[in-house]
Length: 284
Image 1 (cartoon, rainbow, N blue to C red):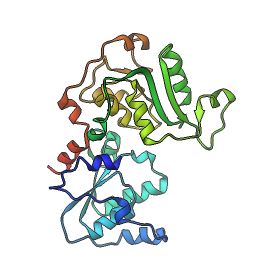
Image 2: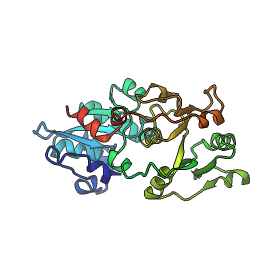
Image 3: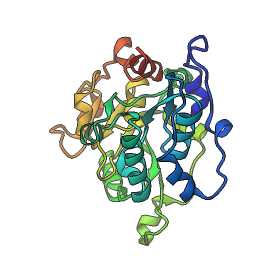
Image 4: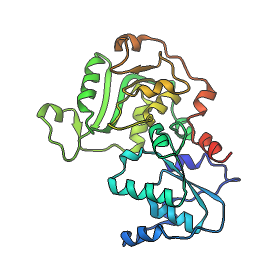
């Protein structure tokens, strides 16, 4: 997705660098990470926005060679391995690195800056909003969500369902569950086509997750109905009860929700969830 996000950056104000162009692993990561905690900053006070990179070696390279890092986390801290979480949190604290996150609980717990989840407006603009099929789409690794997804599929009744659920590598499944699963991931382009071709997006939160996923933002920006287990969506600008069903908490039946007319979001409401808006907030 970096290709689309970079298109939203004004080249007259910013230079765009890709991780592959500035960092290549050379082994000896233990000593490199240790060195990072004692490195000296680049004399330049120019701020450098690091998008969705948690590797402290990359962040430290920017710190030493380019300018002051400002990090956007596109994943919650809970999704990191224990080792990487400890290294990241310790490094940004020692170096006083500015961190932004969409996860409200992380922003409070770790004193990070908060901004709602974002998407690429350039990517979203590729969608054809006039050719939606009446089907519900979900794509993701099981991660303990299979039983709930099976229940949602059953509750959807006669609605066509396109659930792409990748099985967990270390989990054993029954023969019945295997029929719902695949071991294959889909390409990003295939994922986008299936999002664009659906009228309903399904979002099932993982354990310990706070803040909304890209599926929620895709539903908002693409004018699609949303079935989600995350009640935090009700706090977002642009939330309409006619458009969103909080599975497991909603007093309406799922069938009655699907019959309600969709109420489109306003342009200003949608703009809040774009990468270009995030850039304007970080660099006012």
